[in-house]
Amino acid sequence: GENVEQHPSTLSVQEGDSAVIKCTYSDSASNYFPWYKQELGKRPQLIIDIRSNVGEKKDQRIAVTLNKTAKHFSLHITETQPEDSAVYFCAASQYPSTLTFGKGTMLLVSP
Amino acid sequence: GAVVSQHPSRVICKSGTSVKIECRSLDFQATTMFWYRQFPKQSLMLMATSNEGSKATYEQGVEKDKFLINHASLTLSTLTVTSAHPEDSSFYICSARAGTVEQYFGPGTRLTVT
Image 1: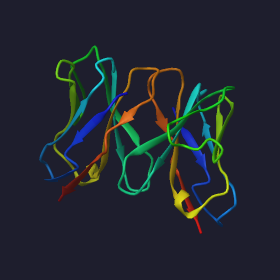
Image 2: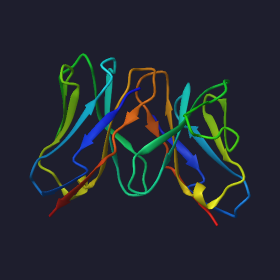
Image 3: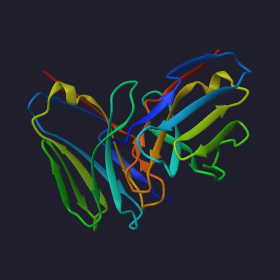
Image 4: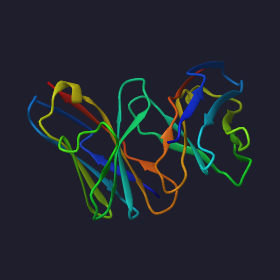
C-alpha cells in the first residue's frame, strides 16, 4: 500500500517568512496529492491539491510542487501570517482509492 | 458548496453504552463516505469506507462489530460505537466524496467515554 512521509513535524517561522513542508510517497501509481489545514479541534480543510499531470499549482500565497520522478511533493506558503498557524497534512492516492495521510506538520507563525 | 455536517459535535457516554454519530453531505450526493479516528497530535486514521447501499469496507484492525457503519442514502452515513469503553474516546471525523477525487471533511465528533 501507499506510504506517505512528511517533514518537518514542527516548523516555526516569523511572520512574513516563507514556509515549506515536504512529503514523499511510495506508490508510483498515486495521481492525486491534496494538502489539508487543520486548526485545533476543527475539521481538516482542503487548501490546495495537485494531480500527477501537473508539476506546480499556485493559489495566492500557497503553492504546491510535484516531482513524480522523485516521488515527492511540497507545500510552499509565502508571506506567512499568524492565522496560517495550524497543522498541515499532505496526502496521496490513486483515485478512487482512499487517501493516505502524512503525519502532519505543526506550523507556528510568530508575529 | 461541498459542505459536510456531523452530529453531535460532542458526546459523553458511560462505559458499555452505544453512541451513534451522523455524517451528512448537505449540498451534494456522496457516493462514498469515509470515517476517520484522530488521537491528539496525531494524523487521521482511516477506519472504514462506505458506499451508498453497500457494506462498509473496514481497515485492518478495526472491529466491524464494534464500529457499525451504515450508509443508508447518498447524503447520510452513520457510525455507531457499540459497547463503548474509555479507550474508544477520540475525535471521529467523517468525509465525503461526490464521485470526483476531492474529499471534504465534517467538523468531527469528540467522544468521551466515562
